[in-house]
Image (cartoon, rainbow over all chains, first blue to last red; front, top):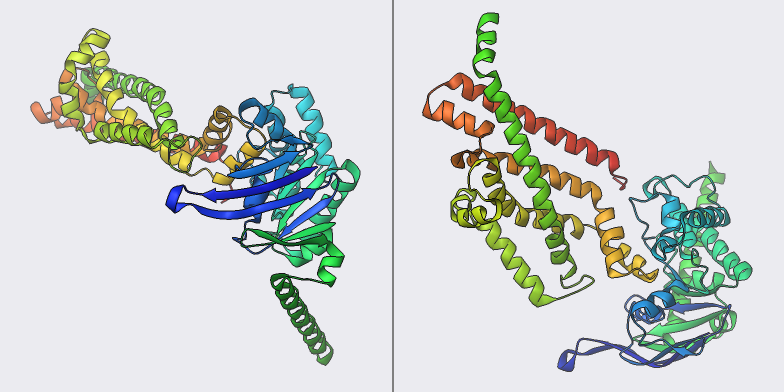
Length: 265
Length: 226
């Protein structure tokens, strides 16, 4: 369970201080797929990064499984981070390491024996559907394959929580669906709690059990995904849904026109 | 023609061979030692930078000054200026040993900048990813910054080596020998242009070979997307 308790985050000090997260209170349950939806600069990335303390809260607490982690450091911080996997928009794979050595990187950091690293690395690659890719380099893979490697790497320490920062934003729509399916499977089969950051309504709708709409450093509404999208309360979410519907309409028109042209020929 | 060549080799072959050997020893050893000092300096310059893993403005500024001062002193001046220090360190200010001290001191700040440049090209996202898996700062330096920039570091080492190759010509002024020294003594002071020409050609060939090897090796170990 992840709890934010009166969490605030500011950059700078004194007169230059600039608060980017205002009094966040929220609980994410074990095993759920929780989405933070918002436009860029809304604060969703900063908020999610307080979970593994890539960002330190300025005030308030982050509580994981009942323990306040806001101030942990040194070995305890490293230990905490091994329980939280993370994947990124640009994959962030190590270019000079093979696929297998990318996946086993977190185990290498923890000084695990080599045989164990290789065994687990191979198993994880099988899980994400990349058996036989062990000795390739990231530059030889497609975007979707690279994100699969990143997912395997994030699972190396058998984390209970996985943070997904715009994990499908650099991918085309078909690949996005495949990656979301894989994430769903990891959530169901391994019981990993997923925390999803996205600006995309369709990603949120596709995978999230619950969604929090973030705007200007505040959570403006939270709810079960279907319910929230059927009955949005905030202006920002209403606007987002309206523009998405319009976009869908346009897409359908385009498809229709293309089909008519085909028939005409 | 054949007779001229064999006569030339008989007269100067040994001299030129010795010169080549001295140049290569001087350059190789001082490059290695310059890296022993320059890599930690370059790493410190990088990680104490404003957006890196151990931001430390005062230390970063002071290191920057030291490196800039080191780089702004002309080699020939440095060579003479630090003679007392050189004597203290290796017991003599003459010969290959005496030349190596100023070569290392002048190359180390250069190496620091070259290394800093290579490390700066490592994507910040990789550092964040490593941190998210619990990497310590030491692990980030060794397993991310240095490891990911290895091809770029190799290219930098070739540049450094060739720079020192050039500087080592001036080391002849303290009797260190080498190809550059031969070219100056025979060509400039004795008007024996044939010896000078061969010494220069040997230098050109050596530099070409080293650069090509550096490029080839860097390309071989480089797995970044083009």
